[in-house]
Image (cartoon, rainbow, N blue to C red; front, side, top):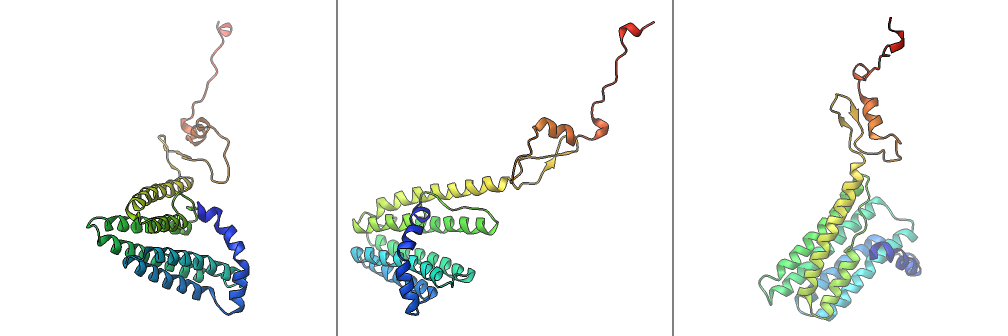
Length: 244
């Protein structure tokens, strides 16, 4: 939700900084790499137990993630290759940060790291659903727990040292988000299903046209699809008055 509602607003606010970085010769790919390095440092801070410093590192990595897109747009250097590079580095950053969380939790509990593993697995699934849907021409954006929400909740868990309860909430909401995106794409894809053979050998539509409605009821489809030789033909009945 935050990605769709606040990202554009925050990006506009960071536009002057993006112009300054562009004039300084800082490119979007360099910022993307800097975001990954910041995430690695954040993971090390989490694993070593410096949770407050880890919150600062998490905030910096999120800021850099916003700046690389801003610099790409302001400099006119946005490209499919840059978008691919940014997406891959985001997934690597997620894996590294949650790896640090698993390392930290492993010092106190033998099973708590499984929560971090579940969280990073669901994060990858949510991202994959969007990538696969967009590759097929559908839209899978949105949901309760996108990347921005994950980082905010993780920051809360780090700041107050309540990682286990926060991870439980994250896993539940991320599972719901994965189902949300699946059903969203499933509904869009159902409009493109091919027609299937009807019971009388003809073909009828399973769904409405994607760009508009046909306006014909199902009974009309059946009558139009039925072979002409099998359609009912009414013959005139002789009138009683014409009998001899």
